[in-house]
Image (cartoon, rainbow, N blue to C red; front, top):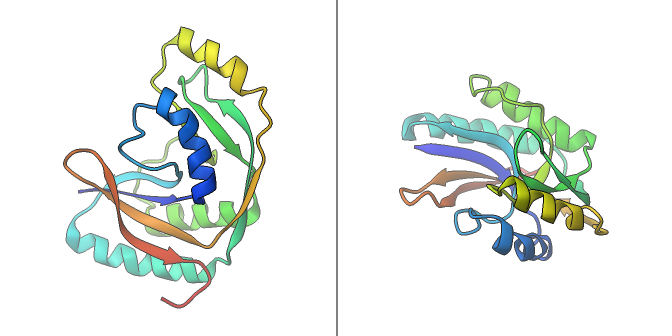
Amino acid sequence: MKYGVVIFPSKRLQDYANSFRKRYDPHITLIPPHVTLVNPFESTEGEIKGITENLHKIAQSISPFTLDVYKVKTFHPAVNKIYLAIKKNEQLLNLHNKLNADVFSNNEKTESFVPHITIGQKLSNREHSDIVGQLTMMDVSFSELVDRFHLLYQLENNQWSTYETFHLGKES
C-alpha cells in the first residue's frame, strides 16, 4: 500500500488554496491542501506498525511551530506546478529531516525540501504562463500554528485518507 506524511493547514488556509485548486489542480478531489513531509512510499501493514511507533517518537521530540505562507511561486521550468510558498524555519526543517533520515532513510531521495502547498499543476505551458503572471503578484500572508502531522494511505480510487495523526511535543 502507498503511504505519505503531510501537514494539513487550517481550514482557512485550505479554503484559500482550494479557491485556486478548483480551477488549476486536477488532484483537488484526491487530497486536501497539504504540505508534503515525506513523499509517497510503499509499505506493508506489518511494516507500518513500526513506522507509526517511530513517528510518535519524532512527534514528541518536536515542539509546535509556526507555518508562514508568504507568496505564490512556481517550479517552472522543471515542472508546471504553482504553489503557496512557505518560509523555511528550524522546526519545520528539523521535522522534515528527522522523518526522512530516521524513519524513511530508504525512501527515494528527490529534490531538496521546498515546503509548499500546491494550488495548480498539470497545466499546459500556455495556461501556466497566463496564470503565474497574475498569481505571483498577489499579496499572500498566512501564519498559523502547526501542532500535528498525519500519516496518510492511498485508496484504490487514488484518494488519500488519514491513517494516523501525530501531535507535536506530546505523549501519545
